[in-house]
Length: 293
Image (cartoon, rainbow, N blue to C red; front, side, top):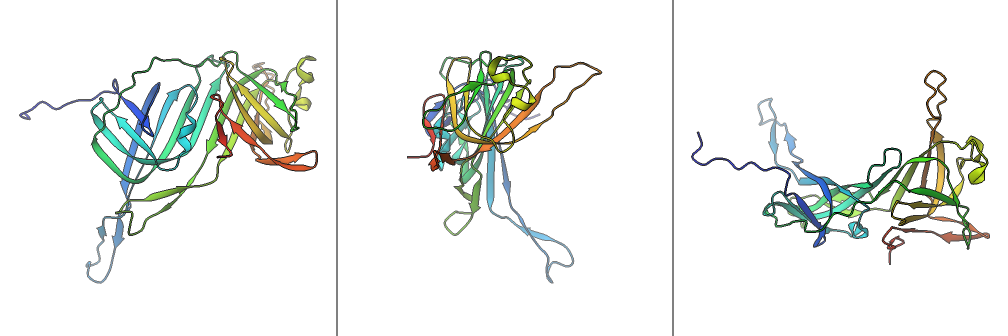
C-alpha cells in the first residue's frame, strides 16, 4: 500500500485558454506527446538495435460549444490546458483545423472541434485556468444556407430543406527542427483553405427557386455561401466552388426521405464583371478571418 493515497482527477474542472484568453464552453480537451526516437544498427550493436532519443513533438484537440474564436489562427498562440485549475499543460501551438458542426435535423446545439500541433516545448505541471463564463449555447434550429452568384451586390436565395452543415477551415503547418529548437519540433503555418458539406433534401415544390436535383448547385458552380445559425449570426464565405453532389439515394424499400450532400471548397478569387476579384471569410462575430490585415 502506498504511504499517501493517490490523487485521482476527473474532467469536472477542465478548462483551457488560448492566447491568454479564457476559452468558454469547453466540452473536452486532450493532448498527445511523442519522441521521434532514432534506431541505430551498426557493427558495434552485435546484430541488435539501439536507439537515441529524437526530437520531441506534441499535438492536441478540443471540442467546445458555439462558434470558434477568430484568434485561433494566430501563429504560435499560447495554449494552457488545466485539469483541475492548478495542474495541466501549456505551450505554443499552431491550429491545423477547425470544424463547425450544425445539425438542424436533430436540433443539437452548434459545436466546433479544433485540432492543433505544438510549436516548441510542452510544459507539464502548473497550469492555472478556469472557465468563469456563463454558458450561451448556440441553437442549430432556425439555421439556414443561402447562395448567391458572385457580384458587386450579391442577391441570396435560400437553399431549401437543409439538414446538416459541416464547415471545416484548415491551415496545415510545415515542420522543422534545428539548433535553436532545443530538441522540439517547431512549425510554421501554411495557406488557409476550407471545405463545406451541406446535407439537403431536394425540394419538390416551386418555392425557393424550384430546387430539385436539377436546381441544386452543380459541380464547378462558384457561389457566395451564407450560413446563418439559430441566433441569426452568420458565416459569409466568398467564394466556394462546388465539387460534387454525393450520396443521392432513392430507397423504395424503406421510403426514407431523399437527400444528398453538396460539397464545396474555398475559391478565394473569381471573376466579377470580367474582373478577377479577391473574396473573404467573415465569421459570426463579424471578424474577417481572411484575408488577414
